[in-house]
Image 1 (cartoon, rainbow, N blue to C red):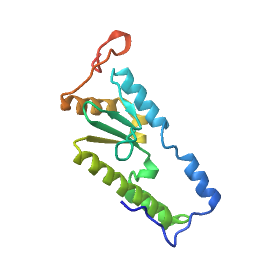
Image 2: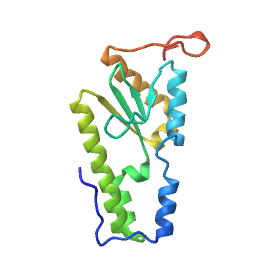
Image 3: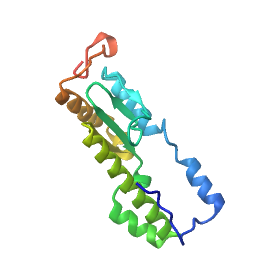
Length: 164
């Protein structure tokens, strides 16, 4: 996949662009940490940011071939119709729309590559994780269980697995 060039589009300023990139963490974001803690409490173990896989998934359950991404609402285009409209009304709207749309295309390409290689890909919005991390855990557990290759570890207080 080619990297977008954004020719003719410029960020508001070099300083603003650097600040936006600096504020956008690539790993160990709050939603990731919330989800990781909830998954750990459920008795599941995982790997983080596995670089050998397309998109470097945030969480990987290798045995069951489940890859999990925690997508930021802004950078990955949650509620894209409304967000796109608002961005176009703001400063350098065309630049930001092009940037986020390229992120969305990249996300889809990475998902397609993983699925083609036999992975189940789960993508969760940051705001959904922060509101209801237990729902994301439930979906992840279901995906792992459907693979038939679930590794169980003792949960909190010696309980086993998510049902506890």
